Image (cartoon, rainbow, N blue to C red; front, side, top):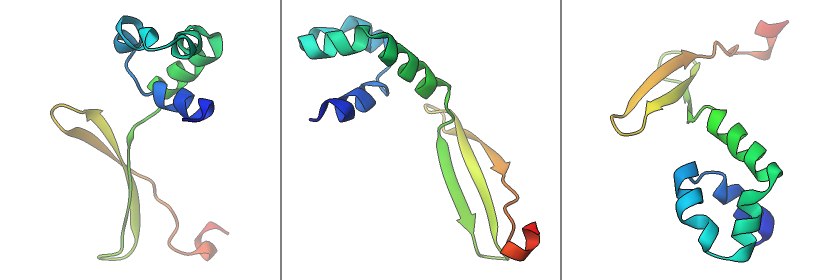
Length: 91
């Protein structure tokens, strides 16, 4: 894998797994995980909202974001985005 792709993939790995296992895979992974740039990228990814963008055309157009709150129990929060239906609506 290219280094930048490997870097991005590792930012999704939970911290405890990185510390306990992933850093022992190879010297490149250990160096990557130990870098300050990786720590910042991992923290940014952890703070980002995970979810799904949905557009519905059933009864008019509506768009919303389903933010996943609990991966185990499938809990989510629906956030109505209120995106205009036509470009003229924003003028």
